[in-house]
Image (cartoon, rainbow, N blue to C red; front, side):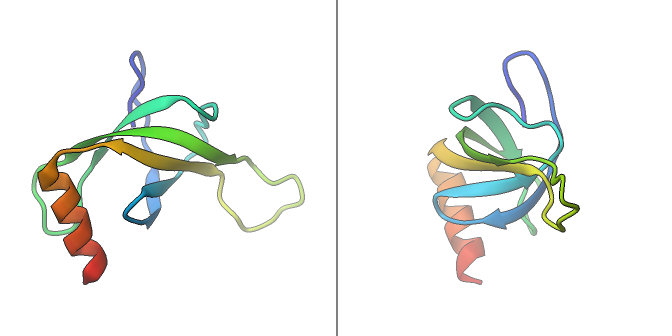
Length: 91
């Protein structure tokens, strides 16, 4: 993930045609736009996708098992990225 001035890393846990969940402790505010570099299995080059933070899940004070992270909605991607994600999801 990348904002205009910072680079962050996170683990992708849930991918859909409309967005992605990224497990990370570096939570960004809802509404912020983030450029994501996503590499799918079988791909050698990452896809650059513009996303928007739609929801966040912070650290649990109750000791729950859910990891902190952010739900990101896809805003803009290349046709190649769109096809690769669609193909990956149908497998």
